[in-house]
Length: 355
Image (cartoon, rainbow, N blue to C red; front, top):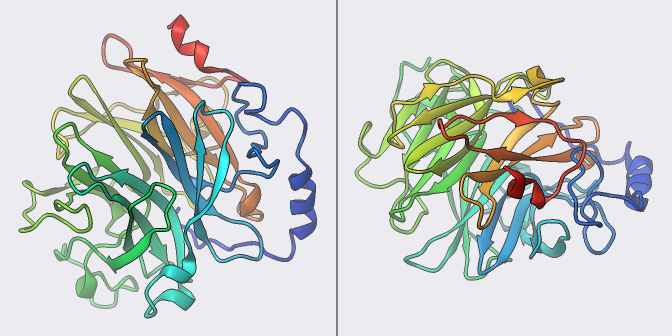
C-alpha cells in the first residue's frame, strides 16, 4: 500500500474481543471457503496472516503473513494445514524484535514471503520493512532451517542502486540508497532460480530481480536486462502476485490508491524479465472495479490440478487492521491462456473438478 498505515491498538480492543468470539460458521470449519468472513484457526482465534502467501512442502501448506494483533509489534506469523481449510497456529516465525539493532525500534514489517532454497535447504523470507512516514522502503531478509521458524535476520537493503533521475531532495533518498522497496513477492522458477518482484521508484515501476544462490541478495554482477528488469514502467502498480503455467509467466497487481481498493490488472510474459503485456482487469461481475473490495497478495497452485490456482487477497480495514479479512477465489487458466476471477459467496476445492 502506498499510504501511511496506522496500527490500531487501544481503540479497537473492544471490537477485537467481539471478533475473537467468532461465528460458529466461520470459514474453513466445514471444508469450504467463505470469502470475506472471519477465518478462525484451530484454537478458535482469528487468523493473523495479512499480506501473506502460502508455501507447500511435503504435503503441508504453510501460510505466512503479518500479525496485526492489537498491542503487539508487527511480526510474521506462520500457520500450517493439510487441507487448506483448517489451520494450526505455529506461532511467530519472525518477531519484530529479531530485526537488527540499527532499525529494530522504529521499523515494522509488511508482506512477508517465504520460499525454500532447493540447494541450501534453507527457508528464506523476504519482507518489506518500513518506518513511519513510509520513506524507509527497504527489503529485509531472514532464513531458517524449519518452515515454522524461528527465522534469523540476515540484513536489510535496497536491492537495486541505479539512479533513474531521482531528485536530490527526494524524501525516499533514492539517489543515495537506490530505488524504494515496497509491496513485494517472491517466485522460484522451474530451474531453481528465485526472483523478487517489488514496487520501486516510489511505486511508479515494478522491479524483477534475480536472487543469488542463497536467495539472500541480488545475483551479482547486477546487470539490467540480464539479472533484473524494470517492468510496468510509470504504471504505478503494486501488490504483485506472480505465477507460471505451461512456460508462460503471469503477474497480478493492484493500482496505488492507498487503502482504497481498485481494479486489478494481470500481465503476461514469455520470459520472466519481460517484455510483459498487460491484459487488463481479470475480475468480472459486481465490484469487479475494486477487485471485490480487495488487494492481491499471492497466487498459488491447487495441488494436483494443472492450470488451477487459488487467488489470495486482503480486504483491508485500515482503522482495525487486525480485522482485515481474507478473500480466496479459484483461478483457472483457459485453453487460450486467459483467466477471469468471479466472486463466489462460498466454494470448496471440488470447484476445480468441474472445470
